[in-house]
Image (tube, rainbow, N blue to C red; front, side, top):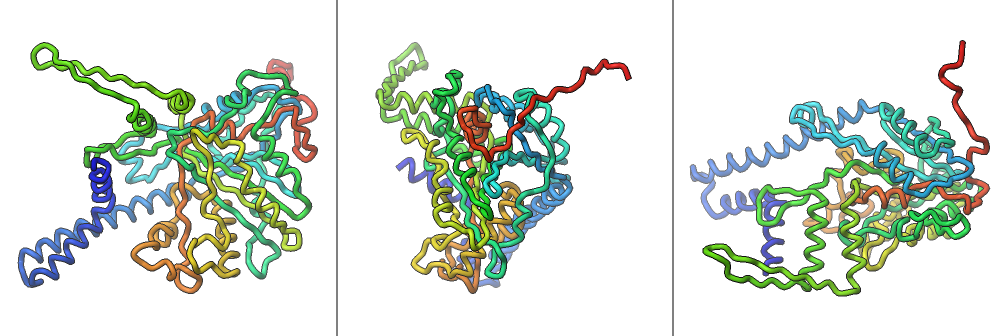
Length: 464
């Protein structure tokens, strides 16, 4: 019963503007429109509703204006010939270089449209040549370089052209075909995925004994043939995600508190509470939690996740190729590249928003032209690194807006081609470093470019 009431409360708070509209329409139908009371209520309700819509448009406009002034640069990271450090070095890099969270005042947020910067950690294969990239605002480039050299002194960081521009478009008339998808977590984000710590890479084992979860990704990317490309992007921003606090109308809490709430929910069936009378009005409560053995690892992993910095994250992959080189098997292989991160007692990734016939997931599948249109959209979403602060088209023609009450058949081909609803989730630095780090020496992929010679800067005190 409590969960039902909480669900009703959540629905009311989330959809209160539409509830007001329904109430107003009911009043118009029930009473005479000439009634002064009804007129006053309609005027007040309409003002509130239009004011909310105008405010959301204003915030969107100033944010897009602020974002248009951000100059982004794509940096290629060429790993050193010998990567001797564990993924913990990459975790430290992500923490120091990418976590740009600061409190923004009302003027910055609602007048200047200031937003937190976001970054894209990418692995790409062009004709089988594997590259590591970071897309960052240009003003952060210096920090990215210094923090990368701090952890990998022999690496090379250089600015390059955006490799996605090499594919002009995906259409029946173009030379390219493509497929892509995004990923979400199967459970609440409080449950972590399998990380490099679970693979023992934090203990610095001998190179021949290492089992590196990023190796299957690099190996698959390196196996492509001429005319094929495979891309992976992990778009991150410091987590400012908030959740509504149950029992309040406007109370909010962050992802750490939400993770603790999920842990309490997990422990609730194994918790007993006994109240004993104390002195006066004081009551002493005794709470006893007996966690079953099979939940020990899950509870420990959930607790450990909140001990590190969290990033709101979106993950997208794409396979593009010349039409004569397009291989359906490569598309299938790309869908499975995250299986090594699955942790059945905790969390794993699940494919969503696939650019194929099951996109609308109805009895009426999309036509071949629509499927190619979806792939072309995915190309532009990848190129824009679109997960946060989406363009207006996503808000007006978002798939989540056109499911109800409009029949889903209307979203096919000729009427509405809705945009997918991008899902983001919180991963901590350990999980991100597991997904994106340089493979060790044990991986001998000839198509992965590495720095073959050691570089060193001259002493700063040389006479000139």
